[in-house]
Image (cartoon, rainbow, N blue to C red; front, side, top):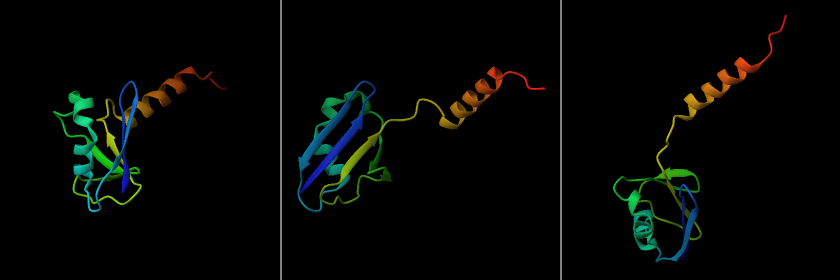
Length: 97
């Protein structure tokens, strides 16, 4: 069966299409994909995994046509970033009377 592995690196999108046996897990497909060789800098910390945007663990069995996604750790807190943008916008508005 055919599955895809996808990773959004800081400078590019990396995708691999694999033919795997029925019953292959996310972890097995990842090992077969060559990800560790392409991105050795991400092998010392486990990345979050998902299938079509839903987080899962490496033991999840894949179905034909699914896309495994690897998620890098967040560099910033999205909620804090949103608060800062809102505060910045409030500071630029002209005063109303």
